[in-house]
Amino acid sequence: MPNPPKLGVGVLYQPVLDPLLRSADWPADYLEIIPDTLWHDAGRGTHPRFDVDKDVRSMLEGVRERMPILMHGIGLSIGSSEPLDEEYVEQFRSWAAWLDCPWVSEHLAYSAAATDEGSVVAGLTLPVPLEESTVDLIGPRLAHLSGLLGLPVALENNVYYFRTPGETLPEPEVLNRLCAWGEGSILLDVHNLYVNVRNGVMDADEYLRALDLTAVREIHIAGGMEIDNFYVDAHSGIPPAEVWELLDTVAPLCSNLGGVTFEVLGSWFDTVGADGLASVLDRARVSLAAPDGRPS
Image (cartoon, rainbow, N blue to C red):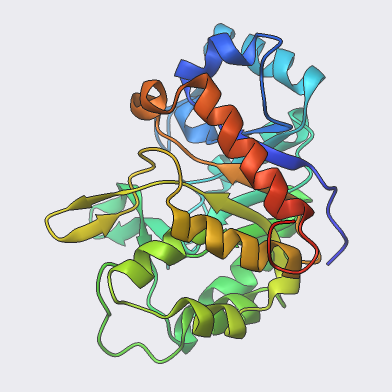
């Protein structure tokens, strides 16, 4: 895996960020977008299928002149058993080329499934079963997708709110083995990991010992909340102390790390505020600069 550019710290785009994004006080080194939220997809078989508002296109043109842009997918459905949606992949590829993305990312998940009535889109990412058949399915698809995009594809670890019976492989082994295919790498979401630890699904130290940290290209951080006795990945504010501890530990060990991205939903941005956003990014820079797994 070629060394990625060192982008620094970034923010996942939300429209509420627009005034700050246009100002001299913008605190991030790069912007990450979920392209599915910025185009309208009329569905397979429609022509034209994808429509982009001119204001969105203008916004992205302005951003790419100032800083790098990353694309974080939710619709490639790399874990689906049906063939890749080639029209969707081409739309994704054209945007990645237009925005000059150094890499793209997706979830180790699926969002579309084949039925007797045709493909059904779930509208969210669903975890794949952790077993040999998943590696056999996704590996070739990942290599094919990387070839079509002409870019490395980083797969993100999942949130699990309970253990799934019958699974035969730990998630780190699945991710490690998939990295051997094409331009595969890992997007390590340490908040997702914390969610799984908090809900009693896995052990963080065991997980990180098993994961090939040299394959980690990007890290996500976020905040969450308690709902009905579960801690959920709500992207609802500043990362908790435990997430910072995980980031401090793991970031210096990821020798090919290109960036740390903060995710916060637009509905929670007023709670975080511009000053809070800047503080989160400054704190993430401390973790990136630490030489030995602890902030300097």
